[in-house]
Amino acid sequence: MKKYYKDMDIARGIGIFLVVLGHSFPDAQFNGSVFYAYIYRLIYSFHMPLFFVISGFFAYKIYEISTLKSYGRFVYGKFKRLMIPYISVSLIAVPIKLYMNNYAVRPIKLNDLIMNIIFYPLDIPIQYFWFIYTLFFIFAVAPLFKKLPLNIALLVTLILNLLFTRQIGFMYVYGIVHYLFYFFFGIYLHSTYKTWSNIKNKQIIIAAFSIVIVILNLNSFQPTKVMYPYHNLITSLLGSSIFLMLSNLIVNGSVGRLFKNIGKYSYDIYLLSWFFQTGVRVVTYQVMGFNYNIVILIMLLAGFLPIMVSMYIFNKNQLLSKIFLGHK
Image (cartoon, rainbow, N blue to C red; front, side, top):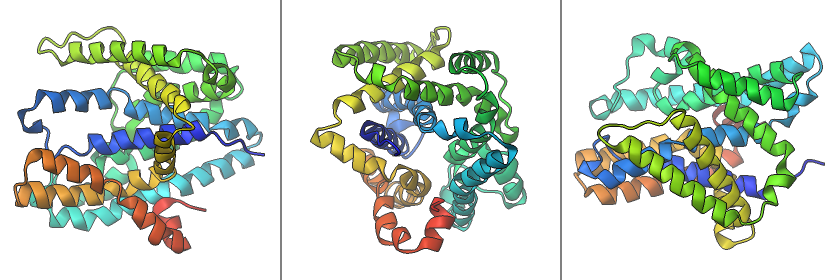
């Protein structure tokens, strides 16, 4: 019987909260606030690696693949779960972006649209969908490493992470290679779950890791941009570890239950929150000129409206849930 890891649902909930918060700043100038700019940088220093770690944690099925046919079924299943929503939601966003092109941070260009969706995920209508695209190809590549002992696979992907620094936009090859390590780190955490979940004094470890990650991001935030070697790798691993251990600590509390419920809708929120947050940004900030702090709060709350859409629309329509959420 499939084991249920409640703390990982909580980690998903915390992760998607950080994603929505990171998307709640209406512009890249942060209204001149150093605090907002720092919070944004802090979130972005680890929140996407955290999602690849969580995805890897549940990727045990790659070790059940034994034939080319089972590999094909596995990849096809991931295509339906990830790429169908990636394509369909991206296309739905096109007319909306065209209508609001004057307000868009990245105005849409129709002549390269299909080519970008297929081959250049950093240039699509909803830019942060690169995660879905990259995760699909990581799922496709990861089974090729399954014959290696897990420790060796982890080491190989770490070396690739450190050595492959060329930003290749085509099929976001850089992202696939870069995030493959965090995916396998998640698999490793699954294999050692009992050990790390039973670590005592997690509060002390969380506090220590938090101090380090705050200092590292403060240093990189200075005008001189003091960057330590492997800064991104360190902040990604520390940030992911902090929230995985925190999720384990609060697993039975009311806060844990809140994030667990959010975590169940994390994919829905990721796919649909753009529509609500962008609408709020355009109306309240760019058209009506609301106070910057109020706009952040409204955008944050709007980012969770997809939960209602899923509950009252997609969960009641199987076809829509297949097309836009990748449900079976």
